[in-house]
Amino acid sequence: RTLLISFSLFKCYCCLALSSSTFNEREHNLKMNTLTTPSVSVIQKALSGKMILAPLTRGGNLPFRRLCADFGMETSISEMIYARSLLRGDAVEQARLRRAENEKIFGVQIATNSIGEGVDAIRKAELAGADFVDLNCGCPIHEATRRGLGSSLLRSPKKLAKLVNGLVSGSNIPITVKIRLGCEADTINCCEVVSAIREAGAAAVTIHGRTAQQGYSKNSDWALIQKAVKDGKDQGYDDVPVIGNGDILTHYEARRRIEETGVDSVMVGRGALTKPWIFKEFNENETWIPDANERIGVYRTLANYMKDHFGNDEMGKKKAWNFLP
Image 1 (cartoon, one colour):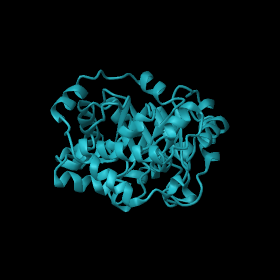
Image 2 (cartoon, rainbow, N blue to C red):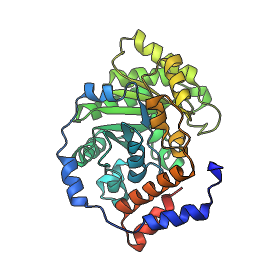
Image 3 (cartoon, rainbow, N blue to C red):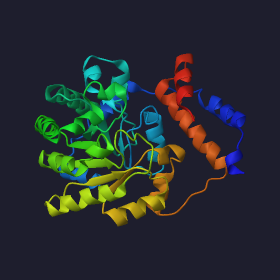
């Protein structure tokens, strides 16, 4: 019965929600810029024993992250930002630097293959209030790989290690890296890549259990993620968290993956989009099944957050409506 809430009723509530106060951006930026810069150890602790929100294109916007934080999300990462576009002043990319007031630990994910460009983008992220910056080495889309970004960086672990080391050396905030198993099934090299970027100084690494070629098809290979965890311990990198990602749709699945593979944390994407209260379930180790009124309440809250972020004029409503589920 809960799943059969009429779409028309949902729209009615969302329309009501998109009609009051606006967000004070100047006050927000001032508050964000007064945050202290966290150390590597602080970030590593924040990335251990947690369920982390993945960087989600379109879906991982500020209002949605704000909603997830309401449900107990402690660590989140922005949508992927092209460093070059950010430095050129692209308004969309600049907007992705913004952090919700209730995001406890917030990372900004960038796509770059240049040390100088990356360091400049990291500086902008730091000034915007980011606690850490994540380097995207997993995006499989042609728009990224044709530029030598995203998953294409996995083809040369040595070059990637040099890039990571340069970013770490030029940054005041910790640098993490998100990868895939490899580019294709016959070029899987995640263990080699993880070893290289750890030695380069990465504060943590996230492994998505699929190759770039697989995209989001087939099941994630958690056995390879487990092997990377074991290799790290054998090499003496116990202090560098490994975060597992892929097919985490329930809180009990998250717990099982942590226990079975030894990953320090898990990262969720689709699981959070399906039910943002998955963080509450993980923290309390208990399934929550909201009734119809509670679900409408969640939608209404998200709509209000969209209004706060995008504004209450016609343009703001149009943008918000593109993101509402």
